[in-house]
Length: 220
Image 1 (spheres, one colour):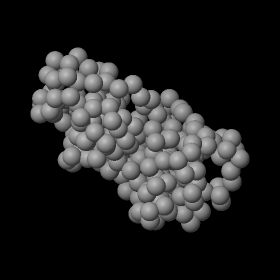
Image 2 (cartoon, helix red, strand yellow):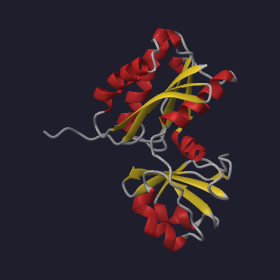
Image 3 (cartoon, rainbow, N blue to C red):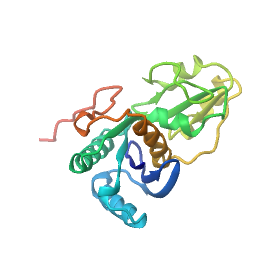
Image 4 (cartoon, rainbow, N blue to C red):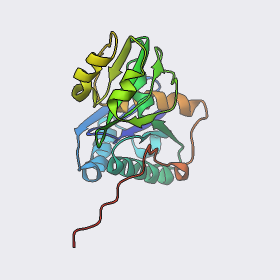
């Protein structure tokens, strides 16, 4: 099964194409507010590099959130359009689940941390193999960190900014080194899910928001 994976939830935007568990090609983009202008050219380049036509794709995997509100909308709408045109199923993933999968085995408990801005983080707790042990949260860092058990491994785009706090309030923390570009892991997870019949129609894709987006009034 050949799957195109798209992650636009953070500034570490990436797209990848996998066949089974084999990564065929990946494009990594350091994106901030340029998701909408760079994503489709990156996908076109990716497929050309892998010598694939869109019709050869069997399905799509996409991170549905939490993450950047703009990035989520761009990634989901792009995958939705491609999947509708191709008549292929989609697999929407929780970004935190993909982060946890990347650090499986790194600690007794795995704690992905994503920057949620406003002084908060997106997070969840997982067992050593990446199975979730509770619902994802958006929280101020300190109360969330103080409630965690010893021996947690931390990973994500918020870890660098929170590392001093983590080390001061958590017992025996670990900091595995992993790339923050997620599309290759997303693709492998997605092809397994799609092969198991867990895909959904493109029309069913929805963003996973842990809080409502902020709407700002335009200046008069």
